[in-house]
Length: 477
View 1: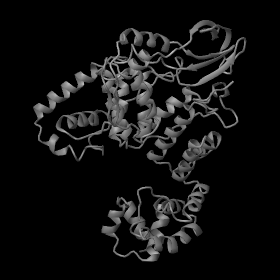
View 2: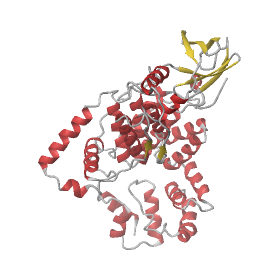
View 3: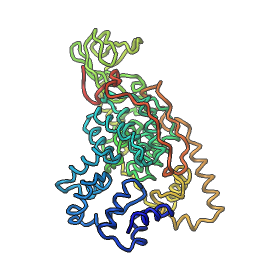
View 4: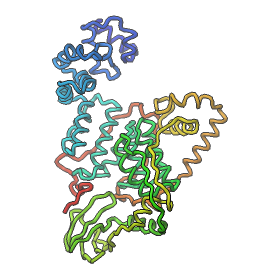
């Protein structure tokens, strides 16, 4: 098939998907496929790979791998790498695609650097990908999500929520499930300078779940457990923090039975809330050394008269207390001593009860389908694909217009009833960065629509914000 015929199909409005080509292209000989693969390099909607035999491993690696490599077809090389990750040359072709500047290959490499803690390399790769003129909305979403992760990761020399949170917001608007999941946690609990707002947190979690994020579903369930006082907020915070920077489901069914103890849990939990409102907690004293822990779990070891790398000055160390200077303000810290009652009340919020946390998954019941369609209509757009659309279509299709209107009003009232910090205002850790940017999300009406390329002002690899370089969960001096 001559190239002018192929271009005629494109100009005539054909979307060059595999199914469209299978229906309209009668002859897929080697010459035709060579033209199709070259065309696919510049037309994102084109997907001729199944049509041209990429699904056959022998054909793919014997014929199309050499052709793609010789002609520098960066998308075709990445397609081979993704389809056959166990092949001996898969990594090589991913690398070749990356070197040719194909955004998905750069993103894959950047994620590898980020997960391995190679932050400078990750930043360099992501900023390179941003310069590509052919970025799709999905590419921009992935880049924004991962740059947001880089700038909100404790231990990164680039840790800067003022840069990271807006990047996460951009990724969320473009349809990143992980970015929505992260913002759900930050909004629900008021972390990294994001204003605490339970309503927005729940909406972010729902958007993540509808976009296909299993841990987003779990976080919806955990938030309801907290609101219903079935688990203490501190426990909900810990579980939700574990699984908000990923879409992989992490929570297993947990049952922690224990003997009933005669403890004043209400008083103890109130005391715990007061302690958690302080920026630092005194965890351990040994001689004149103290171990402090901040609200994000970072630990700092220091001595009396010493200024720690987080700027805190240890003024005095007593038997069970320490006096420190935080931002020039003197603060008295009492040594945290965990008693059997504290352990009991933290695990069993209701005296004698059993903490029973089961991973929440959509079951597509009638009531759940009502929730799914309500949030999909407001956050995704019913014209787009979302989790539960097919499973709930029959149930929602049987609902008459009057019932739909009543459902809409009832669900909207339930959502509006969530005050910005309702559920967690009395029991949650304070936000970590009060002066950082607010996280109020813009309305999303169809996340798959094209959006103009973002112009990000990113610090260069040579200019990290080293003042915030604190490694999470590691004692540093």
